[in-house]
Image 1 (tube, protein in one colour):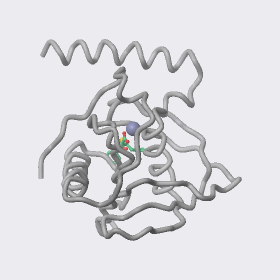
Image 2 (cartoon, rainbow, N blue to C red; image 1 turned 60 degrees about the vertical axis):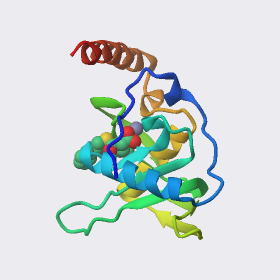
Image 3 (cartoon, rainbow, N blue to C red; image 1 turned 90 degrees about the vertical axis):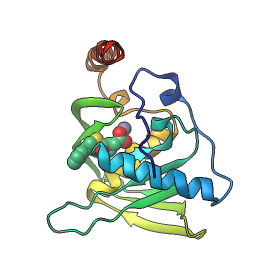
Length: 173
Ligand code: K1U
Ligand code: ZN
């Protein structure tokens, strides 16, 4: 397993719609392992492949809270939302590509997700709570969308200009 570098905004790769995977191969299994290691190390509760520069429809997530839930790492290939609730919920989101910024985003409260698993089987399951929020955030990444796109233009521009400075500082360090 290897830690991968997480891209920061602005980066054109974070604005692309990425391609489905053809199937489960050793490379895809390795990618899933690397993404989980990178996500836990960050630390985060999700990570999408384009965030490490891999332009494939793959994301990982583990929204189990350390206190009362066992770790539940999930590797999700070619996800599709097959149903979303009319009820919405607003919750605070962060992004490993936009570090140290947390803002409220409103999304459907529950979703039904269909995906290809590393076992080669198609799975379908309903998600709520943090799992639903995280899956929607990660699928947005696969379509080149970021959580700041849900904010007003003034807030979004402030965040993007702060991120340009952060990237410059990190490049100098
Ligand atoms: O996709 C990403 O950028 C990862 C992101 C996922 C996410 C967080 C919150 C709401 C929706 C999606 C993160 O994991 S940011 C870090 C974070 O939320 C966190 C880190 C440590 C412990 C708990 C949460
Ligand atoms: Zn993100």
